[in-house]
Image (cartoon, rainbow, N blue to C red):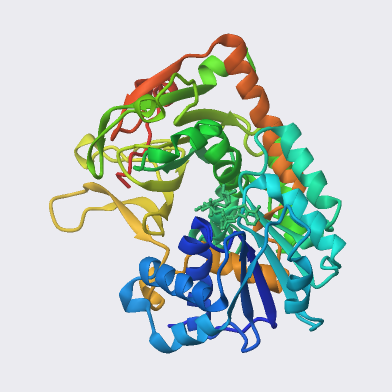
Length: 490
Ligand code: NAP
């Protein structure tokens, strides 16, 4: 069964930073795939912009090389490639200079089509680009601005960034990407919760024991150590991806599927998070750095060896978070993320409470609590683990088995990358899967005091061997509550 593809309205995508890593690895391949599926109208154009000098022809060659590198061979269709490359244009401009903007304006012309400005450049350039676009008459209602993490490094800088952009674009024109929200499984979570009568009655502290959210990477920081050291796992992963996932699990049913209805509910979750401060930071958080060990490529260095100097930046963070409201009171949300972990794996685990009374004898085995496991990476899936009778004679023996609820095999082919959906949602003007200004700020308002409390209490930076599931302190964080991490076993 193939989903029906509806082309979007005519548009120009202008990628500032069109020669950078994000453009090469994610944006160009995502737009190529959408072109392949017939979703780009004939008029659609893609304009790369950055300082280096290239002709349109050279940029097309650059894009072709990127596509051949980052799109699997069997997904390269030569006709699509030709059509796609013909859509590309390039403009050399330094966004901090006055030159080049008139040329951009001329290139865009006065067509009645959407202009999406994707800022695939450092956040220090978001303000200058927004300002220049307004100065050159490029911020009218046809225009949209797409920005991506890092959206600040604390509340104050996030507010400043939002103000800089907000001085030139209305909030309805600003699309803040968190690519986790574009993942199929994340939307499946919404479908499961709000298109079924089955789950919602159980979705509360009477029936759910706890929630785990893990985003584990096997890669280290490598030659990006100096850059990474300014962020660390908390800013790079927790403040955005993990907190967004937490919001979607914990939010109340929105009145409808409109962007603001959903974002209002997410915001309420962020504002209901119990503060973590000097009193509870010791019992509620773990921060750690990897030491030398094993990665997918073999023996690997530790974080400080890669960095070359001392640092207390965490490459791993685990947090026990509490959503203080009627629905979730007493249900911990355990969050963890790290680099150089045992497996690349992102998942949400909803653990239900055990049955109140076991009626089967001990020969049948102890019933294991039901779990709903939403896997986001590496392969997306949704599995509901339940107890059944092990088939066959020999009396009652209980067995824990997964019901596969993702039905991925029912749908054709490859699973689209999150950017494919998000890039075209910008053109559709659909902000549902993008973060609103107040959400980003509310997330920082919860994160900032954790940094303060770490400083104030001199919270230790634990260590873990590269290639493991993190430090023993992380295991202790959850096992103190008589629970265990789901280390990729379900
Ligand atoms: P990158 O590889 O360093 O690329 C930066 C791009 O910006 C280059 O095309 C560069 O080209 C251009 N640029 C820099 N200064 C400019 C200026 N003054 N005027 C015009 N163009 C300029 O960085 P990246 O990895 O693509 O990341 C871009 C942004 O996205 C960063 O903020 C990053 O944190 C964020 N991000 C990246 C990823 C990813 O997967 N890479 C994921 C999420 C978020 P020239 O040098 O030719 O000007």
